[in-house]
Length: 125
Image (tube, rainbow, N blue to C red; front, side, top):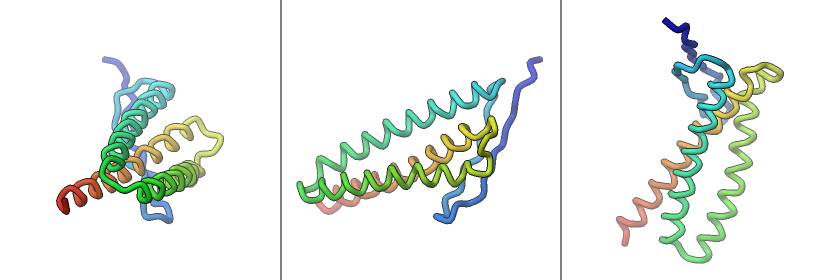
């Protein structure tokens, strides 16, 4: 039987109250773990772009400008938060995994937030 790496990662809760999520995988190497994490983030980014596109169709031009500014600020927050979550592992081989998983966790929260706004606007129409 192959010796699978079972990993459970739990990073301290950031000052923002966002915890890095626990990961379970059957990847065999750190490279595979990093690749899987990157693929998860790509999927989440696509879902977020889809949510933004849905929202963009429902809001006024002025709100679109505010959404664009908000999203730009949020992307910087995501980077900073991921750096904080991974900072304890700077220089370690696990740093990229922690960083990417932290980005994915807050991206999923952002998707939930954006879709909540879409749902609310649709209910008010």
